[in-house]
Image (cartoon, rainbow, N blue to C red; front, top):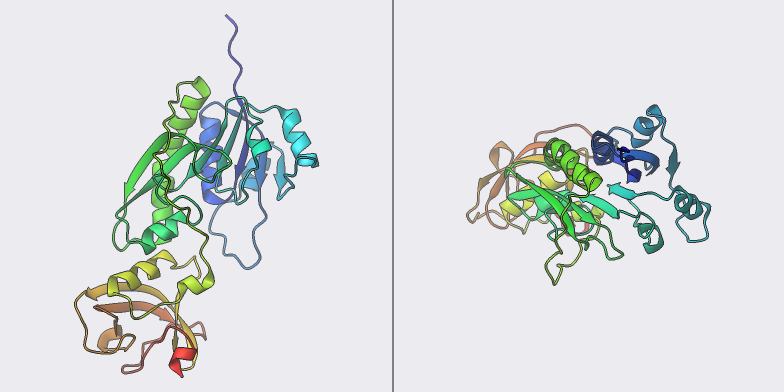
Length: 309
């Protein structure tokens, strides 16, 4: 009896989740014949392993930030490879329809949410901004509409109310290792079962911008705490203006969720800060001089420089 040849895949991935998919794909007995990845962005703190280095160490060719136009050399190369699968994980570009149509066994994406919730960009951060108690990973078919294709597997994790984005990322990575090995093994053996996402789909989230990290002290203590943990380092951090300079609020905890008599943003004793409703305690804040400092009692944080004038 002739042994069935392993499926051949193109992997499009970046960062630690790209490495996760790379390892799980190979562990499932799928041959990766080409890797697509990105250059690190200037000024970005890269806490993750390199998909490029992992691929080259395994003797797998890599293409970086290439051109997906139908008449491009890359499109021709991918067509000539005739892949059985495309697997994507944290790849920053949207793969066009003519690329998704290439693999005979489909194109599949690893998305860090329980789709259809949190379709789109930056789902890990948006989960925390919105105060979600549960997150997860989804493997779904890629179609031209973003994060809209049929689902073959999901795994959930519980989110602690004080968890930050870095911690949640590693929670998902730990849960994702056995989960993706099984999901990709099902693809390799033809046993994966698809189920359509329920309609209508919720709107896709956009990517987060620096201005999204500015603290609005009129918000509740819980909402501000959620923002702080959503963008805590290695993300850029939540910011507020105080005494002529921008500060980064790195870590907080909710002290009280009831009303506070002091104006929002007022610094109370023990690094506690009044919010629109409730009080947070600032456990770590860094001034514009990049040094952690105690907060001056009686001063007041504002949302922007204009509001302080």
